[in-house]
Length: 234
Image (cartoon, rainbow, N blue to C red; front, side, top):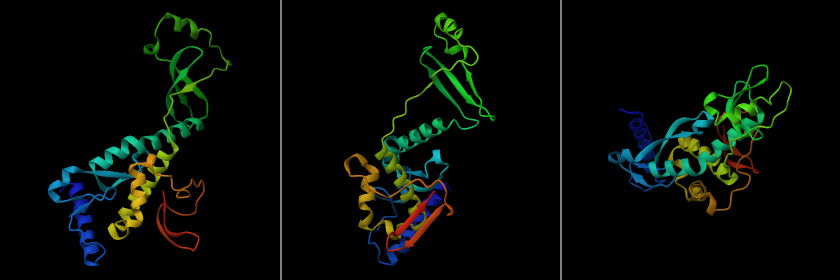
């Protein structure tokens, strides 16, 4: 039995429990948590494993979504989250990192490495040379001379990044609580925002970056009057 089949069966068992509690009257064997389309075991090829958080954040495959939702989210919102992480990390010059850069004043590409002592090493492989002109330009580089570098431009739309963060939180909540809460119409607005963030006003205050936290990653239930509901930390 594949991991996909095991996951399908586990969520199917929970769906049966939810039906037994009269939380839903749907008869599907599996329901995509994002679009709520129903599937039976024979349709399992139409489902795909979903990472949460996204793979770029070290996430694991913890749920099944239909291929359409998985593909749509991957091309629209997840890519913007990945690009935003790359942009943030490039600004930090993280130790041990390596990336392709461009030197505008020399009109040549190179590879920038950040060493353990925070020194930067610029490498220009021979196959990056376009002509003999580049060879002459490199002669102008001397020790101590400052040069400007340019990273590859990253396409980042913040409301898409927001949608990707909320999607991860939503899938993590689904993994922890199953269909108990997420079949409620209350979550329709979140599902619509995940699929089409450009058509819906971005929910405010739904997530923020916390640099220092005493809480471990996980799902928490808050009963505070100021913030009643689930809090997902990752």
